[in-house]
Image (cartoon, rainbow, N blue to C red):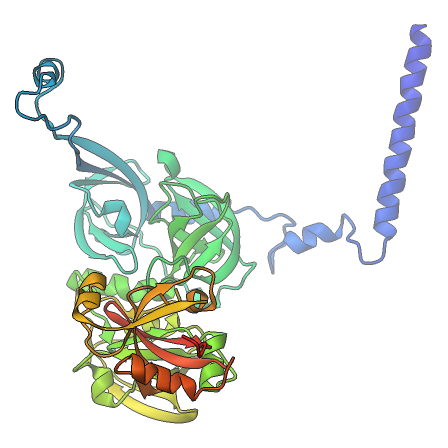
Length: 482
């Protein structure tokens, strides 16, 4: 019986083996398929005699330039006990069994990464790693620990520079050209995820120019080199050993999706932080917005490229240079403006006092304007607005103005917008003030209705709308019965 069972299983194994071989032979003979010999060739690096090159040499060379960062901050906890009224019988009970101090302070630990940029101890990390820290400890690869001081911080790009006083010269990183990165290029991250110091992860560049909605300077490299809490501030290396990004963010709901600040943006910020302790940026003084299909149609443009100027700050370089509301910026110093956000980045990278050339479309005609950039105020962010059927409008009376918190006296006030309507989709919200329709000024509801009555039904027109402190254009096809 045992012999029979043994022969049965042996026959099964032979049958499975023959089927597997037949499958492999079929795959190998299939048109366009890869043989086993082809795969190592795809993985080998140019000029390398090894089929599967190791990254150990690259890690060994760069690990001494990466640091682990631990921070301590003091956090105040809100009141844990209610405020008792006079004579409340529960007050004595809580005083007896709970501490009387209603607000406590406790020390909170934080972790991050960084990298050395000078032999004498300058270190780059993310601003959010150290922004609230009262004590910052930097640990080098050899285990030596130093207390770091903050040299400079930049909240707009989330970068910071620290300084330690090392006992010997350190090994700084070498910056690479992040613009030369291609989607599919291999990259390597070294950092301190979850406090597991000097962890190495490898992946590829998954995308470039990612915007996460964090600010005007969003321009992230997306990578699948695994990044986790604690990797923030660490370097992203290319296979040449050069830093091409500063690891900054992770996708909250994704696995293996990380984002890094390109070094071509970071280098200027880092240099200014080291020299001045702050970043001084060029300033144009305009509010810009994207050109949607509706706005392009209403303006008679065939493209949605460019940045639409919806407002200009009084006394700003833009006003002095002659920029006008409704201009479409298509080039800045010869650089085409594809995404409207790129204008803020290009202007911000210039030094105040720089003379620049701006190409705009004004009423469909190209015009070149020379402008001398000012210095961006510390409390100002580059102003840009995204698009946020029925719509209800009203004259601006004192009562209506007080109700909606509106200071404008001229224009038409939006008092209600039905969700899901074309007006809502276009971007109108209660409290908006319509200042112009199709470049015609609107002083009151009578003006508005007169202008609307002369417009072609169903066609998109340009509305100039005041939204609290910002003024933007909206493309919208109005209904005459409004």
